Image (tube, rainbow, N blue to C red; front, side):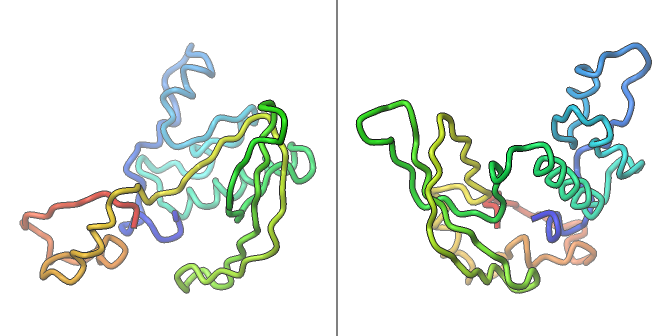
Length: 177
């Protein structure tokens, strides 16, 4: 997502690299809006960019390094990327475990919109599941119908450097597209 968005290629949250002397690490973490929590003090966005509003490419590098760090410190195969959850069930005869059925999704070309090759389904059993559902909220299917209306543009088609929006009224609808 951050390889393409935001289209103007700048993050809109500030890169708060310092909060003044004497504050705890916890205090500093609460004021760093871009970094993910980590015990590795080098994994903060301030180490990747000194700019007040960082470039999205710097954030991509940061996220890639963070993912590599997680893979290194986690038990083998406990973290999976590019994986689609197909369904979740409780284990038979108990409510203590969840069976999570997944399949790997490989992107063949990052420039081509989500060409995906799907592989065989696998099952993992766990106690807890955190399921990140992605960007597209449910219930905005009607937005697709408006794509043929004059004046309606999707965010991924907007040229962020174009002056045509200058001094114009613009409505933005957040739909994760």
